[in-house]
Length: 234
Length: 349
Image 1: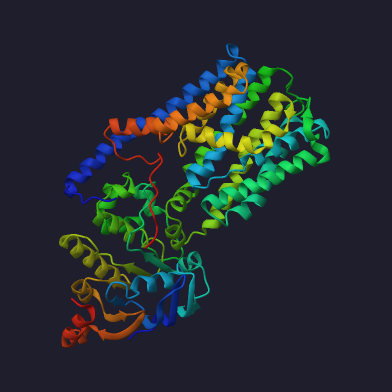
Image 2: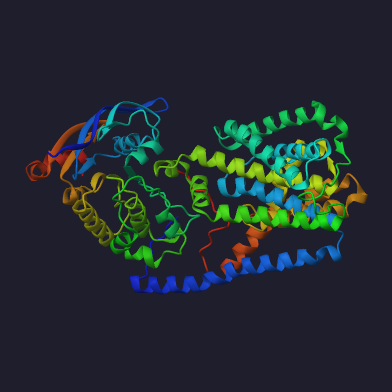
């Protein structure tokens, strides 16, 4: 494994009184695509929201590069260089596609140029003047990913980018994720769709009851297929 | 919210072209309306009593300032009278006792509005929704109490006979018509500031916070700072409107600072259409005209006003301007509207 960019140790999180994460431990190496797999309610999304600082009550350690982020607020974490693409996509309906794209602040140098973003997502250029939420589901997903590429964030947290999309769109999103990896982005991916996850991921962590219960490198997947499908109940 | 789109890429770009063609009329409309409106306002005092139109403009600016906060940042303040009224007192005091020239008096009032906005806003934006409204109401009642008790406000009498001192020390302000043109200039300036704010990157961040605060924060924006800035700007413009009112009526009184005034400005903005540029202006025009025309029937005015409000809320849920622009867009077959009031999306993941 390469030098780690994100390391999560003993991360616990609560929504009000309910204790969701019970000590998550995993690392994401620089330039890797790491997936969190697990059944509904296992705590995958909560893990992402905790890394991002959106869950207020959380303890443990989340180190991003040299920075400990557990005590920072969400906007500070975003400025440190972590970008989050939530499951519900969060496209703003009162802004146009272009405005949605240009909204996130640049947090570091080395983000993608707008031209490059349009090259990857030509549809966004064509639909620039439309209201953000008038796009189709797949296009909205692309916009949600596209707008965090401009900011210079190195680590992308993608929460179920393929949820509810047609197979042909899922395939496109897979290609885009591969391209992002080539360009040096590090990606933490939450997925229900194991086939998709196995196609793009370098490493897979299985999450259950708010803990990582097992991990597999890419080359270990084939030998452990039965075990993994057992964990995921698919 | 999102439907799957059956169009192919080619069709989509064609659609986009069509959209950009459709886009111009609305924009052109707004500019056209601005030109027509200003031209009308320039000649209006020759056939309408200038003090009356000046009053309308003054309240229109107040309502537009309030709408900046409610319509674009999603914050419902129930204490805007504090900025409007207290600034009026400060301007009145500066003109009457300190002998400031007109522009300095108005500047002092505006600065006071901003400062008061900073104080009240810093406390209020920590809470959302109804709690935000209640905090602003409570704090504005404290301002009201200060105005009632402080020695420089004249208590129940208010400040009367505030002199209309010359603008920059040279331009005579004693005639109604001159004051009217000053008010018109201030009004245009204020509306221009609001327009630029709403259409700037800052305005887009505000809209994103209104719609989905968590999302805006996780993109890296400090939502509280943006809300506070919007609050201060809105309070400053409300203060500007209040100061201007002193120039018109030569009077600063408790009416301007009490909670009914906070309610009235909500009424104007909602009636005209929150989140639109023209809505608050139209709303203020309607309310002020009603009040003037119905003055002779006395306390029945509020009943008529209430009835108009109920009818409007039932017929025009987006406010008059909001509803008209919505229907216009629909009639044009253009589903893209970015200024109208949108259903707010829940942000829980």
